[in-house]
Length: 151
Image (tube, rainbow, N blue to C red):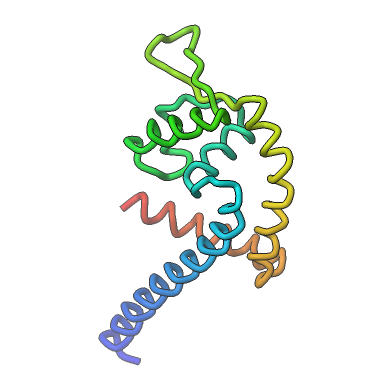
């Protein structure tokens, strides 16, 4: 294969990789959304609730970075979770500019009840790969993500 053909092949392979990755992510997201819809929460609300449940109080201003949504949406999502009494706002005692999202007792009880089943559902959704394949895929996706970020 000459250099021109090899370059064209690599460009087409990169395009195919992007398409397959995008379709795969969409399929997985659809299954995950089906798993959580009975809770009356959208995927973003569930992601915020899961973050605070798993990692403890979080500065509201930093949540968007951690769950990959626009920071402009965070206030709206936290408002909705607060109305459902799953999250409450707590001022930072050291910096008045910072407000934390903190899980409520109701939020903790809900997550204690549903999170084990959610993890099992994720295991089932991703059972198309064995453990070694998942470990390899995680490393490959990290490598790809870091490369894209560095560009």
